[in-house]
Length: 353
Image 1: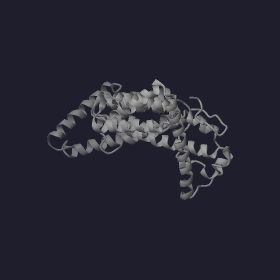
Image 2 (image 1 turned 90 degrees about the horizontal axis):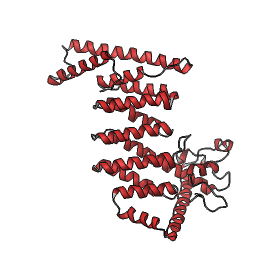
Image 3 (image 1 turned 30 degrees about the vertical axis):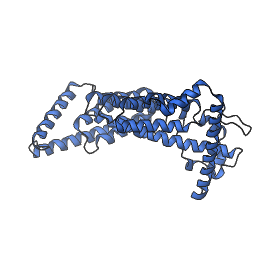
Image 4 (image 1 turned 90 degrees about the vertical axis):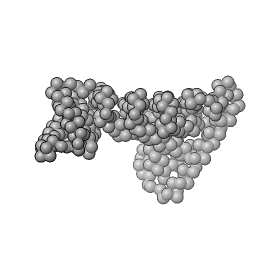
């Protein structure tokens, strides 16, 4: 229920980052904190870990005492239910009290990673949806990135009351940050899965999380940008559409960052002409304006177009010198035919699907 803090004379929010903010040190004190030696850092982490263990034990005691039908069902399906039941139970527990149910988050991530490796595709789709909802609605703050335990002002942790609790919330923040990194890595792997439904689900989840939370922006953006090189036209086209939505509607301030990532992708070794075509068409649709940022973006794009022209000119020259044989045998002919088709597509001026 309501108070995630419990005891020590203060009732804290059940939303972990609100509780942590209530225990935050004044900015001037936090900024004056010096880095601790590893031994002292480890000692503070041990205090935090024990505080969390006690918090979990108290929660489990209360749950078993309540003896409600819901808690009995949750206990049963966590051990002997189907994959879908386990996902549902873990999601309910983690949303109900994230601090006391970090194990549920761990089991969801383990289910996703196992499903991805062992081929439980349906389970993977369900786990992606559950984790996405959990991180978005219960675990990630709206307006800031998370910190590792070692990045907190540990030297000054005792500068205010309730040090033990403060350390516990810093420890939880570290756990959530690491868990979310695992989730983003799993989405990245799933976005390259041969099964289209998994690719679509993971790319959409990456876009939704990038749109609504600042944590792991770079990793999520890379998932979308890399899909411009997907062999399936529909997937590549969808990635271009989502990136355009991102800079046109959701986060106009990210235009230059997204443009830079797309440019880097474009000049990466092994990226084909089709992917470069999608990248160029996408950047050509970026909305420009007369602000100083808009002018910087325009200059950045002009530089990119010249670099693309130079690269294509160099490639054409090399192919002409090699008698058109950019690859060996039949592959060279197939490659040339494909390139010609894409040049024809460019002349027709489509939006890339």
